[in-house]
Each structure stands twice: as structure tokens, then as C-alpha cells.
Image (cartoon, rainbow, N blue to C red; front, side):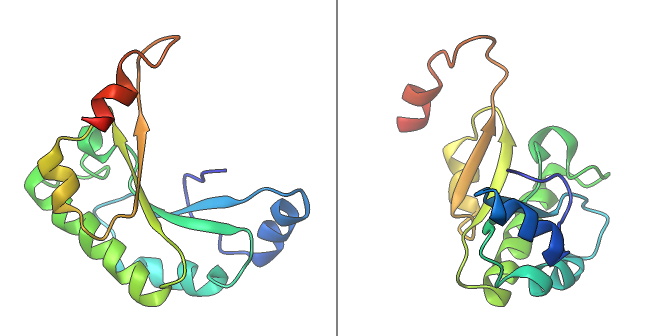
Length: 135
């Protein structure tokens, strides 16, 4: 399960865990928030077994982290947030969700990101998405 906002209540995660559901806990989607806003949610549940990984952003290449940030400022912000999460919780990977297929230079610019999620608006099939990612 990927959340859209942080789950910081262990009781909520307990429910998912009892049902065998792992959580990709999104802790940062808004560029106008301080990067340290993720500290509370991460610290609150970083040891919970239902937390599979952390997530930063949602289609941020389209929405600039729901802010007025310039695209050139979004990339370093995502990397900083991911690095901070890794500092607080080195035991879980950090993901980001991109709209469509990210160019190689953007993938390389986000060295603190371990997992890429793609929101692909390709209709009823994946089209050539997997070949494109592999290349």
C-alpha cells in the first residue's frame, strides 16, 4: 500500500500488519514544507514491521512538489529529504514516484533514491514502458 500522506500512528500500521499488508509510507509531498517535517513521522514508525519503505514526492515532475518551486530546485530537495530519511532510518529504502519515465540525468541526480515508482498513463497496457526503463 502506498500512502499519500504519512501514517505515523503505530495502531494504524498494526491493522495493516495483521492483514499482511506492507506500507510504502509517503512522508514528503509538499515543497513548501521544511525538510525536517519528515522527522516526526519517520521516527514514530521506523521500527514498525509494516513499513516496507519510505516515499518522497508524487509525480513531482508535473506538480513541483505541489509548490511554486522551480524544477531545478525540486531535484535537490527530493535528494535532501531522501538523505535525511536514510540518516534517520538506514534500514529501509527510500522511493520516489515520477510521472512517466524519468530521464537518465534525473535518475543520476537522485542518488539517495533507492526505488523509482512510475505513474504511467499508457491506457490499458504498459506499452513499451519496460523496454524504455531497461534502456
